[in-house]
Length: 123
Image 1 (spheres, rainbow, N blue to C red):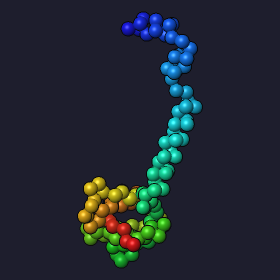
Image 2 (cartoon, rainbow, N blue to C red):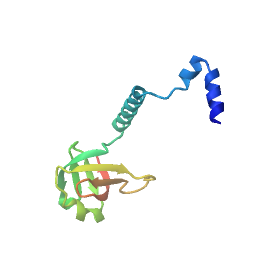
Image 3 (tube, rainbow, N blue to C red):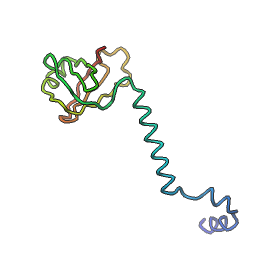
Image 4 (tube, helix red, strand yellow):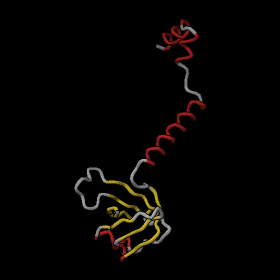
């Protein structure tokens, strides 16, 4: 098998060899930059910021306000946790899969405490 590959390489034209060359570090860098740009575009098109910062906790943890001034209502079971959250903790927001019809379609995680609660965005 190896001999056949070496034989093929010997018979290959320079153009064919150039096509099969391994990507260089520069090629990888461009690819990583493109991936980062695509991810930034995806995040900018979301109706909420997936990573944010806690600004205020209101009404005993029932409502949290984030740095971007968005307000989120926390479900009743999660309020015992969110009532103790302190700013400026980093927050991660994820929309539940198959969340259609759910009262609290988002999961909000306080990255400082690693506690996740269900929430819905208030307009």
